[in-house]
Length: 156
Image (cartoon, rainbow, N blue to C red; front, side):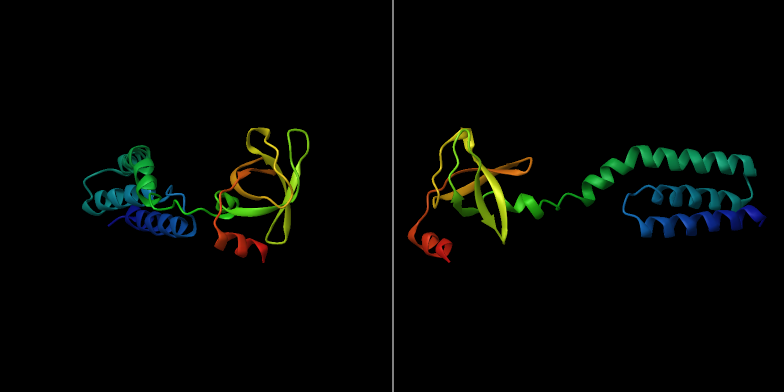
């Protein structure tokens, strides 16, 4: 075994460590390239220059072909709404009236939000609204249809 065997072991270990500290799936492909070069080095059939060429070619090919597919596979179940997206579909009571030229207000967890009506509709103070989307720093809302239980819940 020549010194390149130990170099490739170092490359494999280093790329695994880098991949474990990040989540971008970039250096994992260098791990596979390093393993291929390590095997070639262990057999002694290929010169050092070709080991390096094969390492980069294998790593680049795997990166180009498999990263996108692998990321899509790993992220396929991450559709949970978080942060502001969780506000869409929620119902709140208006604190101030809004119309086509006035921005209203509502309170979400002790924070007051600027509110505009969907299609610039007029919504009166005290009306129960549903968040349709977020546009910049404003919530876009529409009047919500509600039942008696929701009315009691929103009064609290």
